[in-house]
Amino acid sequence: MATVIGISGSLRRGSYNSALLRACAELAPSSVKIEIASIREIPLYDGDVETEQGIVEPVRELKERIAQADGLLLVSPEYNNSLPGVLKNTIDWLSRPPSDIPRVFGNKRVALIGASRGRFGTVLAQAAWLPVLRTLGTNTWFGPRVLVANGPSVFDAEGRIVDEATHAALVKFVSGFADFVSAK
Image (cartoon, rainbow, N blue to C red; front, side, top):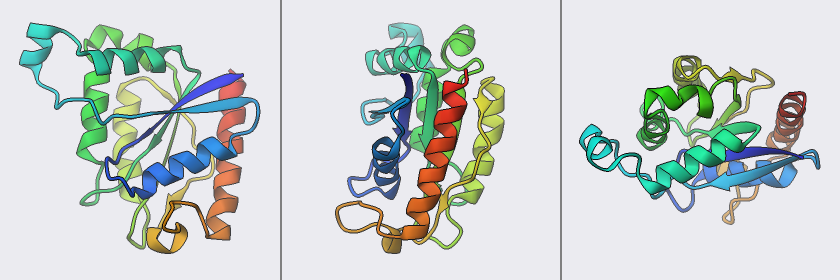
């Protein structure tokens, strides 16, 4: 069975992106297990901290999980028409030291989805992630895009998807990404 590490780029308790990630984990076919990782304990990147203390434990643990996994699923909100700082900060930490990039990200099968309250989903955030993923040397999957718009009408109060079109799109996305990861 292939393993995918899934990361939500939102820290909010009622996050649509975290709900979207949980739905992906539930919908994953039996050939893939999506393990949800938290970035809540990742500190702000500070080169002085890295120099004085090395890679901090929450980062070291997440790096190892990603390095050992077959794939990485980033579920990214869109803030101010771009990528969220907390998720970018996590990726910045995970890319330290630069000599570790090939081990952690090199040719890693990666997919990107997201949800927002707005009408356009996360189209600009997903575009902003592309140069980052290219720089890291990932093998990014460009299957059917999932840009969940109008989050309040897609998720119920418990974070379950109630919109049939979104559910169907997510099933297709998770199945396609699972095939991509498993074909390794």
